[in-house]
Length: 461
Image 1 (tube, one colour):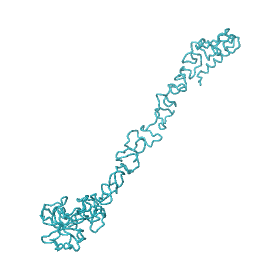
Image 2 (cartoon, helix red, strand yellow):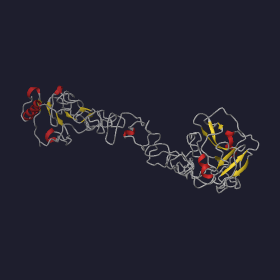
Image 3 (cartoon, helix red, strand yellow):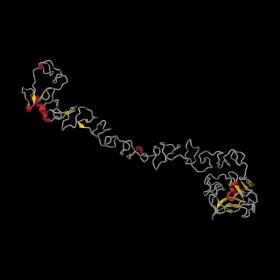
């Protein structure tokens, strides 16, 4: 649509020239020359009735239709087909253009003072847009090759910002669909990819998560909802990697510390189910292939001196007296250990093995209340006579625990015999559930406060 920018006064002149053209006056007002209507049919087709020739082109405009400009434009006379004619004052930047039309937006001429530009086309994606103004960010038209968007406003949060760039994650401006935008591309903070960080988003939040595999599963390598690596003992089954995971540090229950199901032959005694488990397939040793006690045999070349009525205690002796007192446990059958005081008094009924004099039997090594260590010793104290007699707890023959409670006794009293016990059935399950137990920490660590026979390392003697 042509926008008429011609001033009101000039429009009035054209109205006047239109009237003057009907008169025989050859000269118009104010220097304008107006043409007069000639005899003819008045249809403006340029035929012989009007021009005296037959060379009209039938378009009603001056000229012969060959595409040349109007030869009369610029003569100062408004001819048919002209809107104006100021003669030499016609100009590309003035009111009357060089082709004798009133200046208007879209005519290809920049009307000085009224237009910023005029490229003669209706395309609003180039340098000059509707209204003949220079394209600019915020005019509502996308300037091709210069702008990526233009929504005609300065709202930075509506998808097109004030620089005519689309709103993007990381520009620091919260856009639709974003939960946050901290203006950076760091995916390890609390706003990765413009969404609030959470376990399962696929980004590892520094200082908060150790892993994040982008899912809500807990049975794979990264657990949910804490985003911690799936490890044996966390109580979460790692499918394909663990047989079980009971979340404790007890190695004698249905699930071992390696997160495998306890089975006979794995070398780990399943408390309450197996008598023993030596981890081999030899059926005629001290632990059968059914994980039951088999032939009791003292080790390290020692000999069996006596066995208790219930076959759950045994006395072993090194006939060469070459075993240090502190190493007496090495003489016990596989899986057995030196008897605790509690095991002894619960199992010794009717045992008539004589002690005293030259027959001294030593059991568990405890830490003394003072310094060093000492055995629960039977024979020289309280005159028990036989192993069937209960005596008070003592830390008799001095010794050392290689792991703790050391003393300066060294390797001494090698003539004593070892009192060995089968393990208490429930010891190691993490629960004190037997009169033979003072403690039960569910582990096989002999250097802590609870010994592996479930009695206190320092019983107070």
